[in-house]
Figure 1 (tube, rainbow over the protein chains, first blue to last red):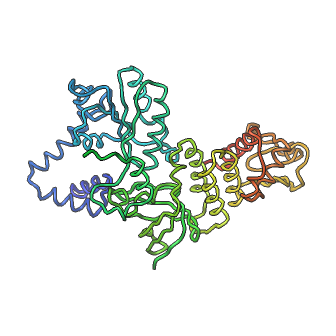
Figure 2 (cartoon, each protein chain N blue to C red):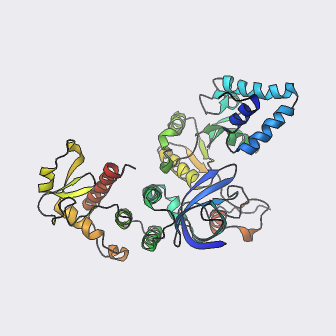
Figure 3 (cartoon, rainbow over the protein chains, first blue to last red):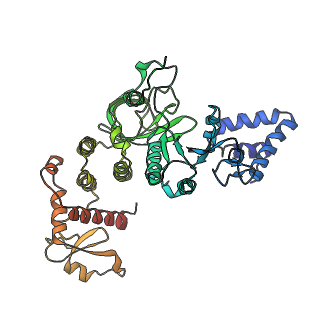
Amino acid sequence: MKLNPLENLIENLCKLPGIGRKTAQRLAFFIMSMEEKEALQIADSIINLKKNARYCSVCFNITQNEKCNICNNPERQHSIICVVEEPSNIVLIEKTGYKGVYHVLGGTFSPNDGITAEKLKIKELEERVKTGQIEEVIIATSPNTKGELTAQWIADILKKYKVKVSRIAYGLPIGIDIEFADEVTLLKALEGRKPINV
Amino acid sequence: MIYSSEAIVLKNYAYGEADSIVTYFTKDFGLINLFAKSPRKIKSKFGSSLEPLTYSRISFIGREDKLQKIIQSDIIEPFQIIRENYKLFLKISEVLRLLLQFLPKREPNNQLFYLFLDTLFYLKEKNNHDSHIIFLKLKLLSLLGYLPDFKNCGLCRDRLNGDIYYSQGFVICKNCFLNNLPSNNTAIKSLSQGLVKILNEMSKWKFQYLERVKLSVRLLLEIENFLSYHLSNTIKL
């Protein structure tokens, strides 16, 4: 059965993560009410992304060229690699002013879900470290069980190379009341305490 | 209505932007899935309490025939030490996989719940863990009815003696082996009398008894190989 254009758009929007039928309907009606130029811009940007975006051959960030802007930038510190789960994490870390380069794993280790070390870009990270030009690998996977497993797995693989492997700090988020923190987070915050310089 | 129980997290997976579905092994309700609102947000009230292996007291609401919602989770023991040892966690992951696969939903199993909990407390304290994890797997299969009979032949029910074989989920005697030769000979495995005897005895042991016996590395490996073979050939995980 051939769907009408509106129904067709709703069906396709439903394929996106976190979009149920109701939200898809709302979005479809909003697109319907938009200026034609604006709506076509959205469509064009999707086509452009699918046609031109690819993974960087060095760090697996999303790029339009063989290498991404960060890997191509000579002003970045290429001896420091920050390992992240997904390309979206790079956007956040870039806001902190970090000047090193990245390596995107493409997920986290989760044996019970069929995501083994071979499915992540760990071998490619090892190849980068093998060159001997890397001084530090900062593992910035999420502070949960899967992220921690992945971090330990990488640290175990890299221990045979002359490279410093560090993990981003655990601790309390800024702005909370300490009485609401759970014991594991508090323990990690205590372990990672720093002297106060005044 | 608000329900509450002691529970151990078996698995949690991301749902939507910041929500999660958490699978618990609860003392009072057996295996249940619960919806957790925004635990992945930085200021979530759940903190680390929904991480796998966390032992906590939970409260949840909702109708039993729908996905119920967790409203509170107070950590009793986080078992963070086990999660931080990735080699140990990988071994425990095999047990988690068996529990997720075989534990029936909403059927309490106190014996298995406390065996799992006792093993986690043991693993938290001790380095020598191989025998306890293998024992847990064996007891888990035994308590849930997935372990073959090691005393009598699975086909003729005669007492097992002499040459013993394993075929398609059954432990069988020599006569049954000769009379029922399957076309695919690779499905048959010869078992030593010693292995069958220890498997039969271990399936009846209590957790505390394991502290008093020392199983050789060779025997543990033999038991583990048998369990892997049994699971891969008959149950098809």
